[in-house]
Length: 548
Image (tube, rainbow, N blue to C red):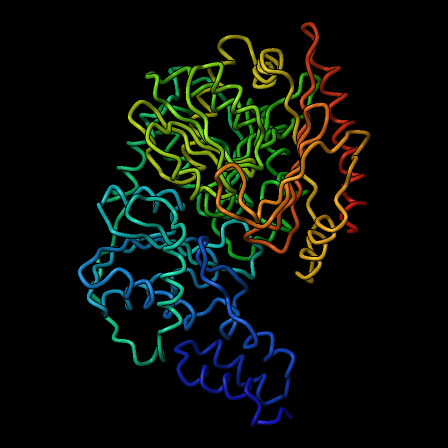
């Protein structure tokens, strides 16, 4: 039996006494009754930190978990920063307790004298981001853990510009959360507005029709929402835009918080796209599209000449979409932006079209802050915000708008007798082949990530895969006018680049590699083979340097 005088026991008892959720109260009762000091310390020895991604973590009892007490406190902190009379829009995905967390947020906000509008159904994150500006709200909350494992949930905060919050606002909200007392003493309201389909989904889809989709519509698409909330909205978006509705993976069509057919509900993870690729082959689809569970990311696959399909990288789709947008927008003051871990190709595309280019820290919150004239932003992790001459309909990544635009681009290419692979080859001939890859290491012990980065700092590599390390930048010191962030960037001889950083949302160390290979003549295949080998060689040497 645990000593009842220990701090963790006291903290657990205090938490249980104010917890409105019978499930997490029972969880704590069991831990206290059977004596599990390690489990109590795991839940009460730390807390989920509210940052620029809001909150994200495993479901369960205690401050180091996502639960109703954590959400009530977060809502109360947000209410204190905003103040009475302000308007907050609230959305939620299909994960465990997402609808409960959304309702709790509305109760706290209305109890504190704010106005709340809550989505009537489980809709994609970009619908929430759109709703903030469309309704002229002061802030938005999306209850989602995006593509995290099924045991997780999260709480993402948007400001009045429809973009995710950035410092110092995150610190202000975090401090306000820390000042919240017992949640059972919070005043709660019940007079929020419910946003129906016609209130917000219809205006969102109407805004998407202004994207540079083109006029070609002959394209057969195989699609999966990966057990998430994108299915109905994507189907309706295609129908409204005049496309044939994509054929959908039936086993993954409906929201399911357990994600039973995939190990991780992320299109980038091995095996996640297997059912979609099988469906594409069976239906002879011209295009494969997937969203992650909250539909803010978009994955794209295309047929191979000899049969089968290939999933494109986020950088490949980003390059294609960037050039497509720039060809279908006008004005000399346009801006395109991406993050420091994405391909350098976007800078060359921008120069080729005579528009401005910006590079930001990782995270769409930073891309959206790059300035006026932004018509396209992307991150290599399958996130895209596509705009038109009318601007960006969503000030965050939007997997539904990206899916529509990719379908229009692929349909136009098909009408011209080309494929997306042909468009990639055209870009490689024009700008050089920019090939990227990722070395990603998932860990159970987060200290291993810090040790690996510190190992690179104390023993910096001087050569990787036969390339000389020409410069090493410590991103924690701030580089090129960017705010400090944990990570390292290396520039190597022969026009190669590596960025090493910890993931902001998962227990991973991520390494982003890029090589640029010139294309000689019309045949791009030799350059692709050379680039693939060079990336593999870089991965091997970098893994040794990391000691992982």
